[in-house]
Image (cartoon, rainbow, N blue to C red; front, top):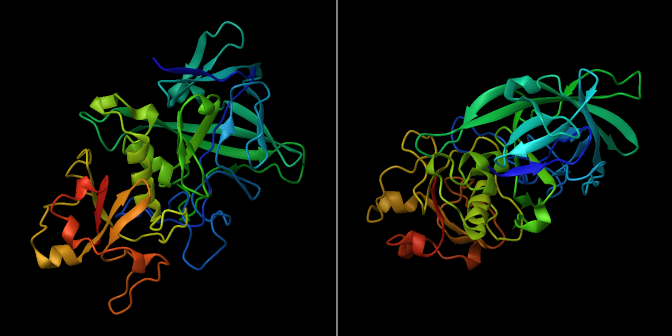
Length: 354
C-alpha cells in the first residue's frame, strides 16, 4: 500500500486550489472549477470565488504534512498539530487518498473513515491560529474504473481559536455555488498543481505535500476521473502520464492558450472523451456517438486538448449564436474538422458543446 506518513505529532490537512470560477462544467454536477478564471470578473487566479479551501479570505492550493510543524504553503498556511478528544495524533495517507489517524510514536491505527469525525487539525495563517475539524466523513466513488472504487469524502470546518469574536465554525470549502451541502472534499497526494500556469508536478518534490480537493473543483474532477497518481490501479484505472493529466486539466479549466488563463464560467455544459475511453456512458459528461463525418456534429465540436492547451478550436463553450468568444489565441488555432478523423493522434481529450 502506498502510504505517506504525515510527520506531525498532531496533524495534517491538505489543500487544493482556489480560483475565480469554474469552467469545467459539464452537466448537472460540476459547477465550480478549481484554477479557473471567471471571464471578465476578477484578476486571473486571485479572486478565490471558486469552490476551494479558504480560511478568512486566504485561498490556498496545498498543505505540507511531512514535518512538524509543516512547511508554510505559498499562501502562508501551516499545520502545527492534530488531536482528537484531547489525545495528540499523527495523520497518514494510505493509498494516496485515504486519511488515517495513528499514535504519534507507534503508528498504530486509531481511526479512519467515519472514525475520524471530530479530529481537529491546528493551522496558522497570517499570525492567527485556527482549528480545522473533520465534521463528517462519507463514502464516495470514482467516476471511472470497473467497478468504481470507494473514496472517502471529508467535510472540513474551521474556526479561529485565539479570538473570542471569531469562534463560529465555517466551511473550509468555499461553497462557491451557494449550496451549503456541497462542502465536502477529497484528499490526495502525489500531484501538485500550479494555479497560475496549470502545470502539474509529480515526483520526489511532492513528498510531504497534500491536496484538499473541494467538491466540483477541477482537481476534484481530476481525482474522480482517475487522472492522478493516487488513483492508479483502483478499479483497474490505468497509469496516466503527466501530459495526459495536463490535457485533462486544460480541458476542465478551458486553458485554451496554454498560458494558464481560463476562459469559462459555472454551469456551462460540456461533453468529452479521453484517449483512454475511461468515462462510462452513464456519465453526464459522456460524449456519445462519435460522428466526424456529420456536419452538425463537427460544428458543435469544441476542441482537442493536449498538455499545451487547445490544439484546435471550433466552437468555444462560451460562444454566442452570432458572436464567438474572445479568446486571445483563437485566430492562431485551426478549426478541428481536419483532425477529427483521428483526434487522439493530436491530443488526449476531445470536447463537444451539446
